[in-house]
Image 1 (spheres, one colour):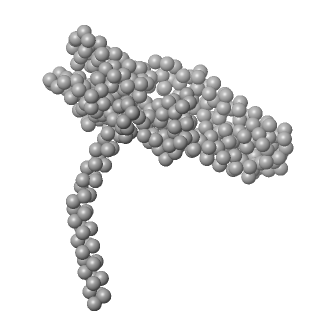
Image 2: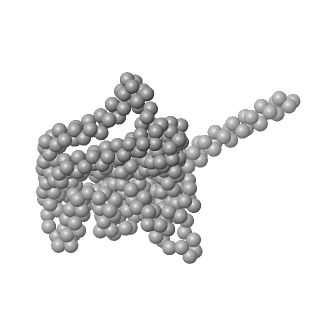
Image 3: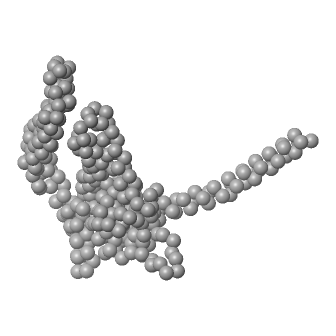
Length: 320
């Protein structure tokens, strides 16, 4: 009798579970998709009776740290850096990653040498590593945006010439082009689609993407909407100028390749020689790591190597 009752309860539970899956899961998936779309536009916090309707950024796993950083001048800068790098972290999460990375680097150096200065230098370098990685990601993302931007201008021009409105043309760019151009235009398109004036949405695009060509594009659109003119022809000319500038940049990279390669060799050669000498003459290399004067020489050599590397980069850097 008990076995029959258990089977009956199990069958009823299975039926109820299947009914819940069939009726509620599609609704939950639709709500999740809508929430993700609204989050891309700019997530809104819950509106209280005395709160404003200004968009508020959602906090991450460390809301207290996020609120603390928001009260300082570093909070908005970190937020802008994370957006430009395409990262989903919050400033609080980034701060925690810097602290953990710095402590881990200091402890690893502590296993090699007990020198306090080496631990401090390693901790500072490890703490700066996540931020430097974000700067690298931002640079890579902005370069990809610059490469894809002429295609976006061509698509906008063709869509306008075909009779579409500018807002509809932006929607086509958002759906047709890959990241990072597509998501950035999608965010701008949805911002003005949800009620933000087009001029403000375009200005936010120029702030999120600190590229000179984007500022030219935003200015051209603003002037055309105020004074009129052939916007498709303006966009064609801008796309042509951007492509020509890329050609010149690639020619410059070819002519400065020798200097860049020299910088990489000069940066890596001392480390390679240090490893080689550690196997050839280990007793002599131990003096650099266990004697105070040797440790100071190693730290000084590393600092001078880094300064020389960035000096070479500035020498061969040519703005186009």
